[in-house]
Amino acid sequence: MSPLASPRSFASGPLRGTLSVPGDKSISHRALILGAYDAAPIEVRNLNPGRDVRATMEALIALGARVDGTHGTLRVQGGALREPMGPLDCMNSGSTARMMLGVCAGADIPVTLDGDESLRRRPMEPGAAQLRAFGAKIDTNDGRLPVRLYGTPQIETRRFILLSPSAQVKSALLLAGVFAKTAIEIHGDKQSRDHTERLLRYLGADITWDGSHVTLRSGPTRRAPIDVAGDFSAASFFLVAATVAAKSACEIRDVGVNPTRTGLLDALLAMGADIELCNEREVAGEPVADIVVRAAPLRGITVGPDIALRAIDEIPLLAVAAAFAEGDTKITGVRDLRTKESDRVAAIERLMAAVGIALEVSANGLVIHGGTPRGEGAVVETHDDHRIAMATAVLAAGAGPLAIDSDASIDVSFPAFLDTLRSVQLA
Image (cartoon, rainbow, N blue to C red; front, side, top):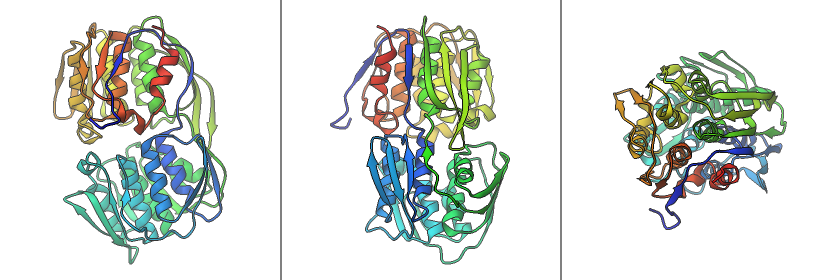
């Protein structure tokens, strides 16, 4: 446990009132990076305040970009990026590592990327292999960080086939094309997150995509302000907590509802959740809505890999909802959870065990036998995974008292989570 970490206890109780969540983490990374594409400044508002996004910001500054501002509103100015004085520290952010590798490959900048112990365990070879085909000279440490990019002496492949759907790998290739000022095509996607495509189009790039193929013909041409939508992943904690905690009724304002991200929403509605989207609109190329959620009984369902892909970060929360559902919930397409910030399949096992809910685990799936979860003060090991720490609070909201061994990881994506939960949860 780090010196700044502390254990934290959570209790049951309904959620009532109105709340907001931080800017979307995925969009924030991309807004900073595309802000550094041109020497003309661009304003980014409602930037996610977490450590992951700070890793991308500091990496861009190390490469010569200028970033000014406070309180979630920044002015980003790039232009001719340069080789940094030392390795880029990606901290715990896989998005930073993979997308900055694409940026530097496209800009032909030699660089070493590294990160913390957890990030060093995560695979980097899938993106590195595709960028080698682009022409980049890259060495990895047995497929992981630290990664050394020696430059991109000549653009080679411009047409790529994704070996598995990955928004980060896809974005790394798109950013390589943008910073190299070269057209590229990407095939083999399966509706993975399209934030990069949307933001590029908003900024005037000539780009088309259909969920399977992406064609980038030219890069951004306009420097419009970017208002970052509220993070759906952050909102998801409150969607599930208000669904499973009796007598809850709350509204979450200004949430991004990009359909490539809302697999959890689709699954919850299929389970019988009482959730309504209001005031739907578009902001900086992204669909946004206010979400009203009320407590509701749930039923078990089957969740296939297509929905799982669109809910990959929220699978622990889907498991929490399934714990309260009548009957069994079967989730397939979860293999990638083994290599997130922690082994999240093992984390789901710990969460279910803490409240007496049985489950079965296979190579690529879970079956959760819903019932009546009962929290009796068990301490859940988070393995420094922010989503598991917050999912424990959600589980406790409906099941009763639980604790986590450390709350330090929450700062990765949602530093104000504990205060926000406290503001809407009635004791």
